[in-house]
Image (cartoon, rainbow, N blue to C red; front, side, top):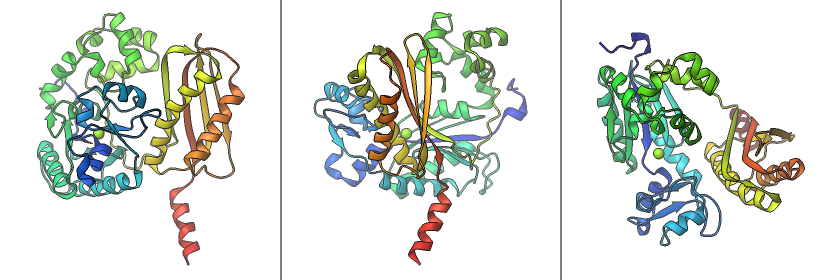
Amino acid sequence: MTGIPSEYIRKIIHVDMDAFYASVEQRDRPELRGKPLAVGGSRERGVVAAASYEARAFGVRSAMPSAIAYRRCPNIIFVKPDFKRYRAVSQQIREIFHRYTDLVEPLSLDEAYLDVSVNKEGISSASKIARKIREAIQAETGLNASAGISINKFLAKVASDINKPNGQKTILPEEALDFLEELPIAKFYGIGSKTAEKMKRLGIHHGKDLKSWDLALLKQEFGKAGAHYYNIVRGLQKSEVKPFRKRKSLGAERTFDKDLKGLKELEEAFDLVFETWAQRVESSELRGRTISLKLKSQNFEQITRSQSYSQPLKTTKALREAAWKLVVNEYEGQAIRLLGLSLSNFAEESKVVEQQLTLDF
Ligand SMILES: [Mg+2]
């Protein structure tokens, strides 16, 4: 007995490469092995896109401003990201996934969900498939991956973190409900630090506390997300793995600990958000025509503005100019708490390829 209706039980694997960009760099440049490494940023400015485990030991994390990373780890080596190489490795990894199933949903270059409920090899154990996939990744790319295996995407995602790096964890159907009850709120995938803080103030520390709240009350406190929390803690997630999910937009945003006042402070904040965003755009290979800006002020007034261009913005420089122009146009001197950027109106990738073919001939 699992206590969860059978239509909610699939065999889902979440595969997550360990310190992906940093590991690719250490693989390809032996002089970087064993060293604290940050991909992205520089001593003075920018954002860490990925940190090696040697750097993580000093408290360096991805999305951290490089200046803070440098302060925590003065010996850290900054390396410029090479997304072309990361994409090529990512492609190799995806080919390994497809030996087992075509139900593969990539989350980024280094993470994907797989539904192996039915699989090409007819293997009944999802844990065994995860092990074979990790072995193949190691043998064929020289890189380590971790995996989480469970009944839905949420639990698989949470599980892949447990025995990281280079490990895997299975949460069996009959263990799922107990696991969820004991799970600290901060570990719930999708509950950010702000929401986690709010939950703690409301006395919600673990899954079992969350489960004691009824649906109406959760909705009242957390809006639409309340219903999601209600279901997730009961193991009720219809975890369809969607291989062809089409992205409509690609964004990054950051809430700041203190209010930003004046254009100069805003530009420093903008740079941090911009770099994370630009890294995401570059790793995705998507090119879009519309840029949007979101600014939330101290009193939670929010403005969003968009600007569309006739051609996709192709370079990081073009993205930066367009995004900063929006900021300058919209900023009216208010104290800012949150800044977000996003890109949409993507060019059809197939069309781009077609055009290139036509030109080549
Ligand atoms: Mg990873």
